[in-house]
Image (tube, rainbow, N blue to C red; front, side, top):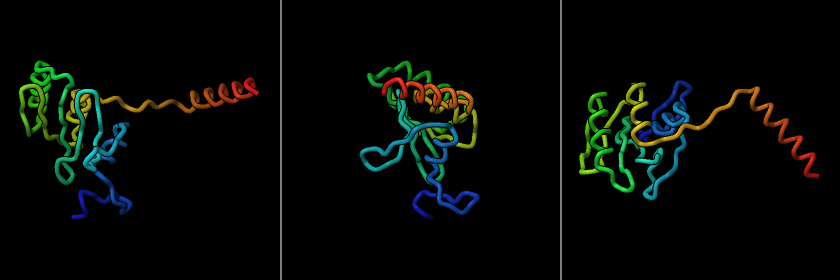
Length: 136
């Protein structure tokens, strides 16, 4: 195919991990080895195969009970277990399944980007303009 990229309805190449992150209001970064991931407090989400995403749960410091609890919830929701360690592991999920996506975000400890209403944005801009006037 074209290196893990898919085409959207406008014919543009879309990175599946970036598309998932945009849809779910999440931040991405490029890992040390050049892989784009969505980092979280207890792990990260990454592209496992073309169009397939996986969640890696690696709590630091290791928390055996956290992985055991997470693994149980993941398997109940239909994830496919990829790795199973004492206190960490990974599982494959479908990014199109809302329930699986929500659980993957939850167990990896991801935080969504905050969005504000247009009215709140206007309020903040007005406050900043007023504050800038006082500073001069």
